[in-house]
Length: 222
Length: 362
Image (cartoon, rainbow over all chains, first blue to last red; front, side, top):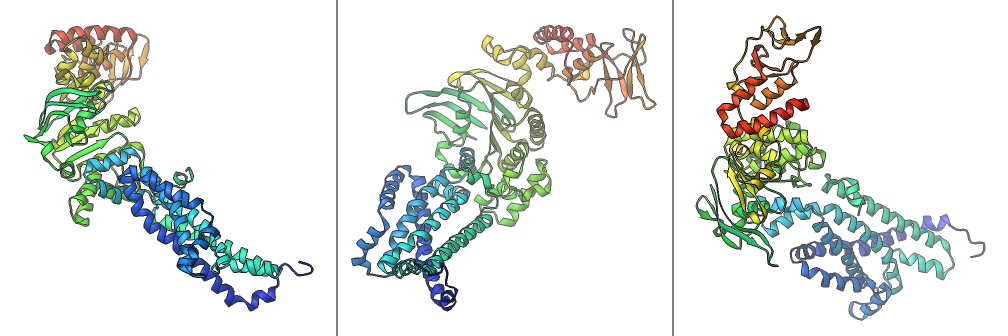
């Protein structure tokens, strides 16, 4: 890259609106899929906890999806969802997030200690009610742990979407490489990291609010 | 009242948990199912609230076959306490206790004020209400478990080894508490334990179970200890059952000697209020005095007191600690004569043993 400096501050100063737009787009295409996946993983997890036979086949399907390379999936989807649309990037990211969140939800529901489960039954909870009122709230720390993994990996994967025209901060990498101009690359890395850290902080805060009873080691031990 | 009417449980793989059991659990009293692990006692307990369905026979609750009742509804009417308390980790103590009232559709305020009452009833401080279960000790958790079971005031309480996982001192406290509660509430309690000591302490009726839920003996604690049905039951009760039997007999009947009179060369010294201060003997003074209260304590305490005294005499005191008189060791054993010949034989043997071995403190 010759005598080009690592960061050109002038470029950053003149592109703040552009960077803000990319960051926002990145946040949406990376994190909305995680929220959609959460909305799917909870009911699916409850059904799997109630009917354990469903779990293995379902988990297998999502694992296979998870194994597919993101770029390949984007390309396959383009004829259906269009080039450079949010859907093209968000559909695979939703599937990836589900592949992470479904097992953590089911693990969390199963992690409720047997005496707690038995006490709930003995006090007069029916099976569904027990899942919703006892096991699901007790699984919150697990869900948050799963969300942290899913969110961070989704934020990093979303950049790949730039190759099919919709990748938020991913643009900055393509742009920088094509022009042998490191400033956008550095900006992309810093902003991606910042987004990941901020998301993680929000999730940790959510756990403290939703599960103040959870001791740190209870989750860290997993 | 609970009736097991030929109730049996055979697992799908053919193994038998409970063969076939007939048993009546009387209302308003504590019945303890006691036996080694694998005797089917927990299975029997769970047949009552349909957590286990019998494969033969029936379980009748006040004359109604429980199989005809909707499980969740049935269970809300039965208190249940288990070994590890099983408190809901995500709910504060108060809401844990209010679980069944919530399930029954009580409004929040009424459920919580009822839960506060119970918190007090089981001897927990009001500020405990806001804690989470992980912030409590094992004994406190168990108290919350009992409070939760009692919240909707069920007539029947099922307790599955509720005090087994706590240390002996805490366990003794919890047992004491249960006795106090039961004296106040008169629930029908069906209690499962493997600890015969606990069974004797808590039970009005004790059911000794063998493998496959076969009944070894059904008796009140005193009868069980003094007259075990056969060798196997006697063995299960343990070697010092005669001595433990002493713990079930009141000390009120022991003939007392005047306290001022020396006994075996030792004289009891008292302060101005008449409370014992020590034993004064030939060239020696002992400052420790073990006492018993005739109206409150048992023959076991009295004998213990006698064995530990240098004069070989127990010191009887009133509730203020003032000396009432001396009970010679022989007088304590004589008081057993009223208890029947078998008890005497057992106790005499055990008494010699303890006198020879020096005895233990309370």
